[in-house]
Amino acid sequence: MIRIEGAFYRVSDPAFEMTIPRWEGYEPDRAEEADATIVLPDGARHYATFMTLGAVAEVMERRQRSGECLSGQYFWCSDLVIIRQPGIPGVVEAVRDLIAKGDLAGACGLLDPDSRTE
Image 1: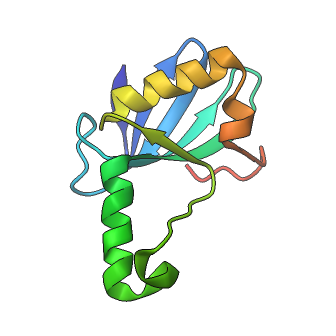
Image 2 (image 1 turned 90 degrees about the vertical axis):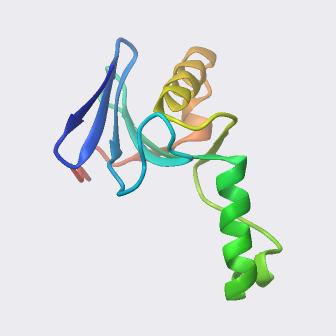
């Protein structure tokens, strides 16, 4: 299901293809955050950042120390989907559910079909 292709993890599913950059120190079963490009069978390309609550808390703590975002008083990230459990399998399940419920376009930004980064 999850395979490595160069600098990316790639997930093939009947409902979508997904690529996630292979960040150093992030194992696919334990990653608490991931940036994903999701391609639907019709060619529509969507983007989202997936994070656990722990990853969000860690960012807020770093910002408290750095002074950003009113010293960590808030967090924002466009196209954010919060997942309960770490790992790419949880991201895959969330994407499947978003597609099945018709919510993918609301949760994930639409990318220009000509803006390929891989």
